[in-house]
Length: 429
Image 1 (cartoon, helix red, strand yellow):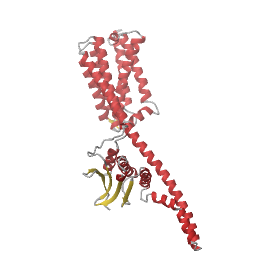
Image 2 (cartoon, rainbow, N blue to C red; image 1 turned 180 degrees about the vertical axis):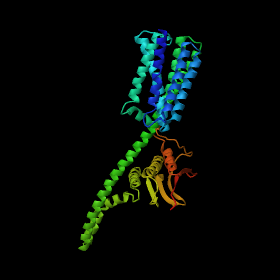
Image 3 (spheres, rainbow, N blue to C red; image 1 turned 180 degrees about the horizontal axis):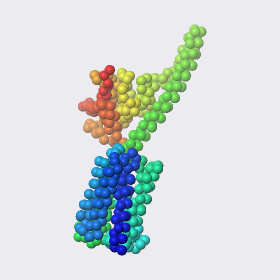
Image 4 (cartoon, one colour; image 1 turned 90 degrees about the vertical axis):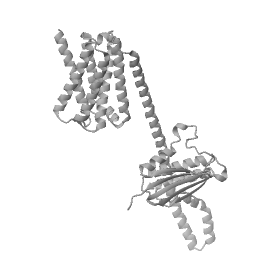
C-alpha cells in the first residue's frame, strides 16, 4: 500500500512539469528541439520532488524556500535560453505559470481546510490527505492553464503581452505567494523560523504591490490627460476646417458680386458691399495661413481665446517645412501658449502680451514663446488647484522636442519676461 501511495504521488507530480512545458510553448514560443523539452521536464520534476521530500522530513523551512526560489530561477533561465520567440512573451508565460501554481496550491489548502475540515498540518504531511490535496491542486492547475494558455482565443494572455507593467505585478504576487506559503508551512510544521521575519517580508511585498499599482494608475492618468488635450485639438481642427470651407465658399460669392458691380462701374455700391463683408474678411484674417493645418487650427483657437482675455498675441511663422509630426508640433506650441496665457491673464491689461516666433537657424529652426510675468522668482510648478491633471506642460514640451532630436530651454530674465524656446534640427538635403 505504501509503495502504491508513493507511485501515485510520483505520477501526480509529473503533471506540473508537463503543464509548464506546454504553457511556455504558446503564442509563438516553443522549445528549439524535443530534447530540450524532455530535459526541462526532468529537471523541473526532480527539483519539485526534492522540495516535497524535504517537506515530508520536516527539514528547516529556510531550505524549502531556497529550493522554491531555485526552482523558479531554473524555470525562467531554461525558458529564456531554450525556447524561441520574443523575450517579453517568454518571461510573461513563465511568470503567469508560476503564479498559477501558487494560486492552485493555496486555493486547494483553503478548500480542504474549509470543506474537508482538515488542518494544514495534516495536509502537509505524507499520507492519504496529502495525496488527495496534491491531486486536487494539479487538476485545478490544469483548469487554470487551460483557461489562460490552452484556449483558442487566448484573450487574457494577449492583453498581458501588450501590458508590460503587469509583468512586474505578476512577479511581485508570485513572491508574495511563496512567502505566504512559508508562513503557513512554518505554523503547520512547527519549525523554528522567525515568524516576524516572514510576516515583515509579506508586508513589504504587499506594500510593493500597492505602490506599483499607484504608479500604474498615475501613468494612466497622465496619458488620459494628454489624450483629452489631443481630442480637444482634433475637435478644433474639424471646426476650423469647416470654417475654412464656409469662408472659401463666401469669398467666391463675394468675388462674383464685386466683379459684377465693378464691371457696371457701380463703385459706390461696391464700396458699400465691401463694408458689409468686413466681418468675413476679419474671419479670414483669424485663420492662420501656415502650412500645417493642425498648427493653423491651434493658432486660430488661441487667437479667439486671447482676444476674449484681452491679450495681444503676435506671431511670426517664418518656417514652412517643419519636418516633424503635426502632433509633436502642436504639443509644443499649444502648451507654450497655454502656459503663457495662464501667466499673462493674471497681469494688468497693459502687460498682457504674448509673442510666438518660429524662425530658421543654422541646422534647424527654433520655436520661441515670450510673455511677461508678475512674480519676482519664477516657479515652474503649477499654481492650479487641480495639481493632478496640470503642471505637465513643460514636461510635454521637453519630451516632444527630445523625441525629434531637439532640446528645450527656459530663459527667465531680470525684467520680468519669460522665454521658452525649442530647437528642432532638420535633415540636411
